[in-house]
Structure formats: C-alpha cells, structure tokens
Image (spheres, rainbow, N blue to C red):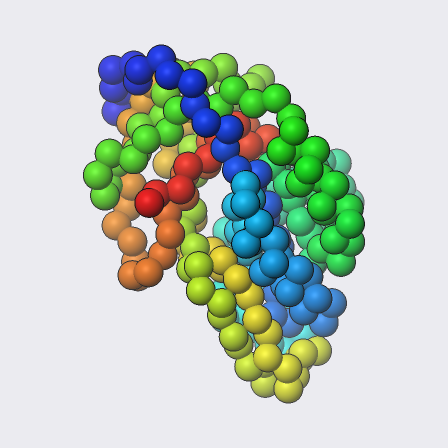
Length: 222
C-alpha cells in the first residue's frame, strides 16, 4: 500500500537498538541477561531479547525461543562474516557485535552507535493496525520493515533440567512476536500491522538493511 509523502520534517534520532541473543539453557547467559536488564533502562537504548532454540538439545526447551529468532541471528552471522552463531551475543544497530559477557565492549558499541550520523525515515503509527514509513535513502541491496513485539516485564523462569537446572533465569524485554512487514525502497509507504497475539506487549517497527543489515530507523508505539 503506497501513501502520500509524509511531511518533510526532521526525524528525531532513533534509539540504539541492542539485540541480545540468549537461551535459558545456556549456562553462560545468566550474567548477560542481568547486564541486559540494566541496559534496558538506559535512555536512548532499545533492548530486545531474542531467545534461541539451538541449545534445547542440552535438556531444557527454552520457553520463549522461536526458530525465526535463530534465523535472524544467522543473518547477522553471515553479514558480519562470523563463523557461527553463539550465545550470549549482542548486536548493536545491526552494525556490530560483541559477546554478551563483555559489557565494556557492548557499552562502547552503544556509545559509538549513539554518536553515529543518522538520517532515519519518519515512522508514524496510524491507529492500531497501520504504520507509515516516510521517504529516505535505502542502502545498497534494499531494506526491510520489521515489526517486533516484546514484553517489557521481567520474566522469571525456573529451569528444571539441563545445564541451568535448579536456577531461575531472569530476562527483560523478551521478544514474543516478530514479522517482516515488507520491503522499503525509499518511497513513502504504509504497512499493515497484525493483531497482537497477547495483551501487554510493546510494538516496535524497525527499518533496516535487508538480510541482517544496519538499522536505519526504529519507532516504538506509545
């Protein structure tokens, strides 16, 4: 659905998008989850926790993991020329990555991303089921518009088997829904938002380069 051009106003600098790839069955992820929860409260940062399922074979099926979250991580692995996906891993604005157990390195990436020049397309929510993305310059290879819904509450999960048996895993901003809304070619366009599967979730729309590219813009529905 194409729409008229949005007014030519300067878009506010979007928050830095920090994606944590983690798993309830990952013995080294507990510390990274705690750090991420603190990062979620930092102004100018949007933390999204993506639980992955490839550690389920260790004995504990992650209660929040979905295969598409691991696929998203694999796109970053290919884009950033890494050998393989791992946890805990942090991706900052789709541009750079660091181990989730290296908070000093993650902090630097977040600071660098916050200072980087930005010319984001305007993103405007039009009612409960539509979002408009304005004009801009897409990167080489094109761009995509993604909808992400996360639970802003802390989640406590008692792990009963596997490497974290007997521990309670605490996670923040756990992603519960993710959907590719369509391509973005630099022209103003409207996208339809699916109905939320559960209440209490926060809706975010991310415009980013195709196949794990850099984040161009992000908006959170109030």
